[in-house]
Image (cartoon, rainbow, N blue to C red):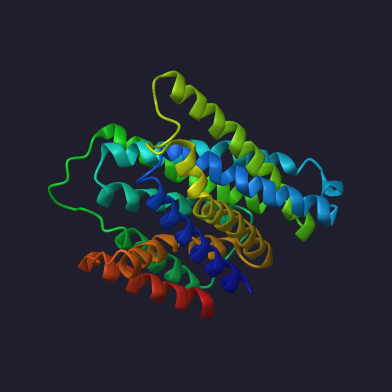
Length: 287
């Protein structure tokens, strides 16, 4: 069950990243983050009211608040890094956030078997290669590398925090709702500050363009929510080390989606990375 839920997480995150990437070609990145999270919060708020999940409020929700603060900050750092450095360098480095939940899992007592340790190594290498790392002739600013590492740490921290935010299904609904509300507050504050400095909040088509894109924005927000939920379940059902690595295969999904929808060609290094990620998945699932 751990492998199943973790792989579902990677699928959902990969599709959410793909959809978000397409939207940020037309809309300011912060606008995509804020609007998609508002829509997700509205849906989750309805679920919380319908299930009575609010009765499960407790100190563990501070983990959800932490995830809600760290998530938008990590995403903003990642977008800034993409603007400064080659995607072939930034994307693979960003996937190294898996080190955080894996380290937490080892500290709390996870002891994967030999095959699983091998699977972790192979899968992480596959994820990095699937990002299409540029190993030659790629001028990279130190600031871009620093921002990417900050983003990676943030992404990994969100995985670790959300896994601790609940122990029941209804509690998970409440935790995800709290996380989304915090996302909106933090992202909205960043968007307001950006506008005050002269940045744009709306695309060329104005509010009408945002309204037309609401279904796509809702998909991105809800896919992200579902991915957080399936990851929390995966981490509770089995070793966090296994759940974290399998959930971190989402760059492979994004690359394959770009290949299927946008007809982007996979570079040889990306194809090799996807193959290694598959091998690592098999080792983790059967070890």
